[in-house]
Image (cartoon, rainbow, N blue to C red; front, side, top):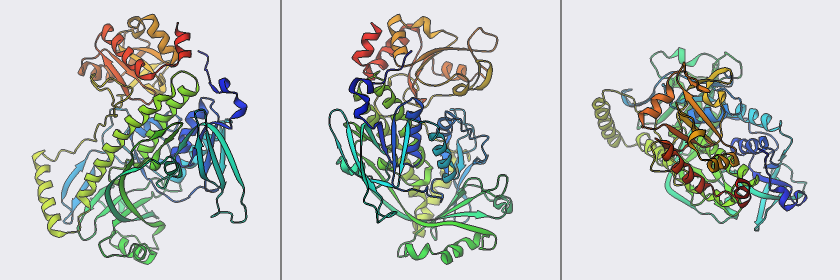
Length: 553
C-alpha cells in the first residue's frame, strides 16, 4: 500500500518538520527514530551539545528489551547490556529475607524479566541509529524558550543555551505539524501548555554512587545477591548491577544507593570522602574501584494531569516521575515514545484523525500511575529509618514470605487505561505473549521472524477468511496484516515452535488476537463472528480519516 503523508495537503514548504521533539535523551531520540524510519521529517532539539557521560538509569524490563529488538538491539547478545539469572532480594538489617521478586524467569513477552545497561552507551547507540535517517535533523546546544500552536501547526522558539555559550544570542524558530516535549522533569513544554502535575507528596533524597570496580565484585562476595535491597533503618541501601564495564568481558559496573537520613546534609554526604566511607563495608576503596558518579537525587511520585493538548504531547520525565525501586522510570518513557510513534505516523500519513492522541493520554497515564504507585509502595518498605517501624515491617513481611512458602513474587502485569482496545476481552490492554516461531525461512521470536504492527493472528485459523472484505480493507488502511499460526506439521505460514501461542490462546479460550504496533493486545476473540465484532470495535476507536474511508469504498 502506498504511504500517504498529509504534508502534501498543506504544502511541505511551510513546515520545517512534521514533528519537533524537545529533548534529545533516550525517549526523544527513540521517538525520532520511530518517525524517521517511516520517512517523517523530524527536528530534535537538545539543550546540550555534548551527551551527558555519566550513568543514570541502569535497568530496563522485558518490554523494553522487546521494543529495542525492533531496532536490532539484542539485549541477550549485546556487549553493552547484561543480565543476572538471579532473584531480587529484600533483606532486613540481620540479612534475613523479607521479600523476594522474580527477576530470574523468562517473561511472557519472550525476553528476560530484567536487564542492566550503561545509559551513556545506550544513548550513543540510539543517536547513531537516528543519524542513519536523513529526515531527522538534530539541533544541539539550543534550549526551547517558547511555543505557540494554532489549528495547523506548532511554532517552537529556541535559542543558544547560555550555560554553554554566553556570547551568542542566536535564536531560531521551528514550525512543525506536531510537537513532543521529552524535556525532563522541569519541562518547558509542559509549563508552556499550562498542564498541571498531580503530585503524591512523596519526597526522599538518596545518594547515588555509580562504581566501576577493578575486580569481579559479585565473585568476591559469595553468598551475597547480585541485586538486592538492604532494608536497614540505620541506612536503607540499594545494591544493584550498573551494566557492563568499558572493557568487554572485564569487571562490570555496580551501583549503590543510600537514603539520606533525617538531619543529614545531602551535599555533604555526596562528597567523595564521605562516599568512600559508605563503601568501605562493601570492600570498595579508591585503590580497587573508580567512583564514576556521586549525586543526590530526590525521588518523587507525580504525573501530568493530561499528556496531550492540541498538537502537542508530553513523554518521559516531562509527563511522569516515579521512585526507582521498581526500575520502571526509563521504561515508562520508552513506552510513551512507542505509543506516540505509531499514532503520529498514522496521523501524518492521513490514516487516522488527530484526536487519537487523546487515547495516548488516557492509556498511558493509567499505565504510568500503576508503576508510580507500585514504586511508591516498594519505597514505603525500604524508606523506614525508625527502628520500631522497621521491626514491625520485618515481622509482617517474614510472615507473608512463610505463608507463600518463600515463593518469589512475579512481576506485575499492567493494563492500559481506556483507549484503543476492547476491555471485555481476555488479555486485552496487556502486553501480548510472544514465543519462538518458524516463518519466512528462519526461527526466532515472533517479532523478528514475522514482524510487528497491526496484526490479526489466528491459532490454527486464517483470520483473512474470518474478516469481511471491508474489514480487510480497513486493516490494509492501517498497514496491518493477518497471520495464521499453527503447530509443527501443519500448513500454517507461521509455526508455533514451542507451543507458546497454543498455551496462551487455548488458556483464555481464544482463537484470534488483534495486536497493536506497540505489542499490546487490542482484543481477543473465540470465533469468526466474535472476531468481526471485536475488529469493528477496535477500528471505531482508531477514527479512520475521511480519506481512508473513501479509499476503502
